[in-house]
Amino acid sequence: MPIATPEVYAEMLDRAKAGGFAYPAINVTSSQTLHAALRGFAEAESDGIIQVSTGGAEFLSGTTVKDMVTGSVAFAEFARVVAEKYPVTVALHTDHCPKDKLGSFVRPLLEISAERVARGQDPLFQSHMWDGSAVPLDENLQIASELLDKTAAAKVVLEIEIGVVGGEEDGIVGEINEKLYTTPEDALAVAETLGLGERGRYIVAATFGNVHGVYKPGHVKLRPSVLKEIQDAVGAKYGKEKPFSLVFHGGSGSTLEEIRESISYGVVKMNIDTDTQYAFTRPIVDHMFRNYDGVLKIDGEVGNKKAYDPRAYGKAAEAGMAARIVEACQQLKSAGTKIK
Image (cartoon, rainbow, N blue to C red; front, side):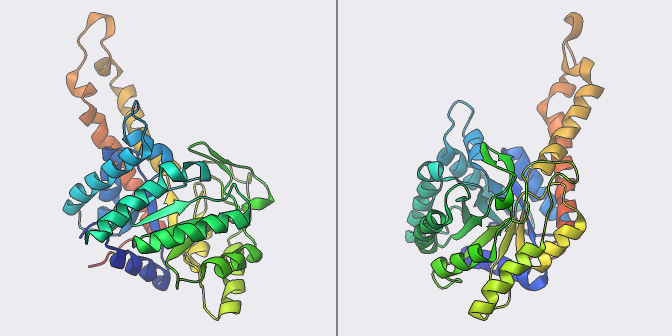
């Protein structure tokens, strides 16, 4: 059962929170990067989460097709087949979905999952993210509430975002300002609107200075203590310790100390994209520089077919990305914790 059932996914999230670790959530854009993610988790003996963004889903459908649902379905079905050969359990997730793409991304995928569940199958994806960071909090939570009813019915976990992740990812731009820090008031509003699990399971991407992409040290200031303030405020009102399962977005360039502190406050999922993109691409660049006269037909020569065969540099790229994922599992303390 390499692709988690709804019950196993719930167990994974609970195990992470209770065990003081978090799962790397790896963005993929192709079959090759999917294999790199599966390989990395297997080598780390870690379960994990593999996800596609709106742009990743569009890319997976073909660069002239550009249909997010087609790409997402193809990814999920392909993952179900190939993941069977890896000795770990993974959950499939869709990343940042803004308001203007709900109707062409998350909602159609939820309908597919609801139909699957009605037939006695598992949902297509185990979780979906609604990114309401660009709209007022009351509208964000109104949409989240509507989606929570649909995700619960489809046995899917909902991910929401309160606060703003700075920087840019797939055209979603967050300004670097005070909104990078979620407040206890924001968190209390979430609990009041969505409950704490009784209406359906959800996880919360709360922001504490997070920025997508890579920035030089000192450009932004992470304050993991914001997560503690949120958990304490909601926990005090509802009599629960660490009531939220939290998500860490925009973590590239974070120190190990910041990552570990965040986990201690209830982070169970950390998104990783920028670092794995580089880890995948860097070996390809190395291959091209070392074999430029083989990958190019220079001065009428025929080149070297073994050098320009995509498998030659694809293998190196997969290994490079997998190694970075092993490192992430070690940083997040999920290495060696796979469900037996």
